[in-house]
Image (tube, rainbow, N blue to C red; front, top):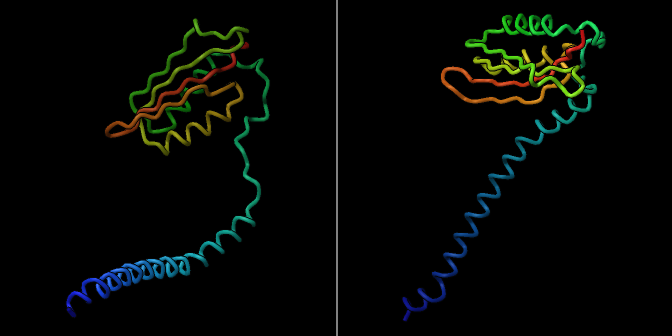
Length: 158
């Protein structure tokens, strides 16, 4: 009779109490983690308030397209590529893809290298005045380096 009482009344309550105790311990660990992270969060918030506005990448102040000889621009882009440690470089321009106004030319590139070098290259490329737009960027993981593919439009005015 005592074992029946224990099985039907005490054990279910004990089981519920154990589950609630585990939930309490989990919540206490979360509170402890929040107490550790709060000062860091507060410090980062103050640092963010002190930051000035983000400067966006701007093209060089010489925005004239009259000096954008396509051959010179491609040569400049090739020399920019050579400044970075890329391997197996392919650069193709296609006259068939001349823009409808015949003032822009497409340039397709495939570069093999590290992402940080590619990021630096992209920043420098975006600052060139003859680069009108970056239409497509592809990043393909490969061993030992990533493969980056680009399609850009350059001004063809000469």
